[in-house]
Image (tube, rainbow, N blue to C red; front, side, top):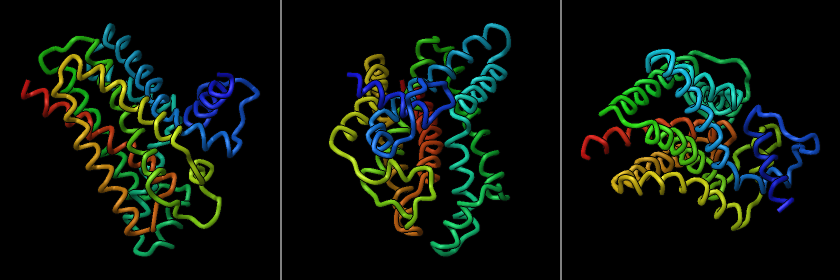
Length: 261
């Protein structure tokens, strides 16, 4: 149990800005095993984001509350995944060879593709969440489940690429390198459990929402295939981009499903 707690805090330190015990570090072996808790981090980020939305909705309208919740999720993670999404937009938008794409993604400066991509991503995420929480005036319980499912399921989609594809870079310059070396069935089972459990609670309320896993899975497969085609694998930025895109796809899928209920 003590080892698992240590791994959880390792994941929490790596994927968020939440303070952790001083004995937690970024040891490669711990980071590799901590990937099993990546979707569980989604529970925390989703819950924190919903909490800010709930408090904001008591003082302001839904639009302002949603913007505050999006800011909260970015502050919790330090824009970890949004940064990866922007780098992927720049890299694949401006590069035509593997070497060029990787070089652009490694650059800390944001380019036109990244800036435009982030604007459209945030806009689509805001509009999707706004429609989702205002349709039929759903209860806060539902909204909380949608927030948590979006963050946990998208993180499962992202980390699953580590289980099926090879790391693209030849060196250790990427921040995802420690989690890209090897894994066991414990990481696969753990990530799947924490990634899918919130969706189970959502489908208990309405079984049709189980269908949301289909477009998320298809999106994950297509993105992984695209990365494989151009850079022979994935990088940490690719994982971040997958998380962001799959999160939005989950919200959009839930809206479409809700209209048939």
